[in-house]
Length: 443
Image (cartoon, rainbow, N blue to C red; front, side, top):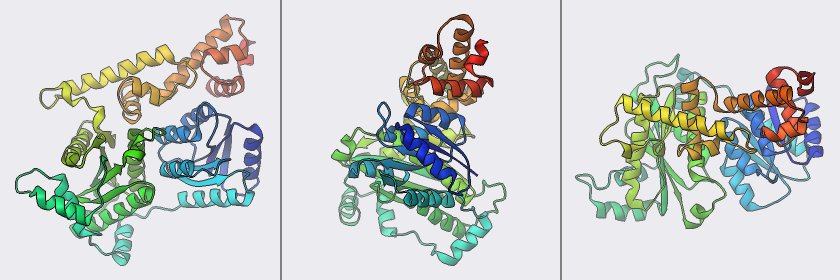
């Protein structure tokens, strides 16, 4: 059974959609409602939300911002966007961020139910075990890499400047055979480990190619149409993706590009593991301007992937999270531990100073520490044993308990002081945390 979160700043719409879904007969366990993005983030961090249905314009935090934050917290969360605006730009960005549908208000009941039904059925799709998967791929797919000439050229571009490479010939073939205009480019590389599943057989080389083909199909499903990219085989068990933006696309500041790339990386890892049954490591480069930097981007993703040796339980790495310039040579294990401890220590200090701030997000804590939300969240949990946002809630609840027991402040005043937008939402979080309401604790 599934949990659904409905977010709209109009309470009547939230109640109407919740009532419609409650009587739909769909396989739904709980329906939560929130009236702004910050309330929604608390539910996403505290509950097992499977489907997010969100309005796109909600004051302090838009539905687009909420989607970005949701995908950082739980990359597998499915999203349906509802909007009073039939604006192509909004729809395009929502789909690019992974929305499964974009519905225009006033909402047609049957249309919404069909959309929700489709999303839940897609989530129900069972994963084949690896032997069944390979058998299915053998039956339906050729082993050859799609567009092998393009793959050859792209791999040559990644190695441009190395001994034996003719840059003039590569330049001519690049212009004739592939559309790589940029000028802003980034790379995502997926390093596959076909034998990492609990029941995985030893995969033969010919079957490894079939599995790579299946990975390319997952990449295509996640990125096609909404992302300007090239995906291709590189090295023995890698799939590489070159993402590009033109000047107009890169200049659009409505979404943080690095966060989007990390969202892609986490979604790729999740879907490959879920549907193909083996692990992978994803490396993400910085964004550089100019095709001549493709070899540098390739070097960055390879270096990012290397960090999996230090963090075996983490699978998505952004090159910019690691302070390569801080070390004259390859960092020692002691250097890495010291660097990671410093990141967590600074995050601790920032959270203690700002936990009562309204609208505090994981993204903000990460930005203040010059590290990605994905890596900060992982490090914080690894070093402290506590989820970062659970730690924020703990500080808020302990402070609210102190204020209830030692002051005459009213509920709405305490709610304000510990960072919540509404007293009602504060009371829900308080009761979930302590098991009793604020008024019961006061007595």
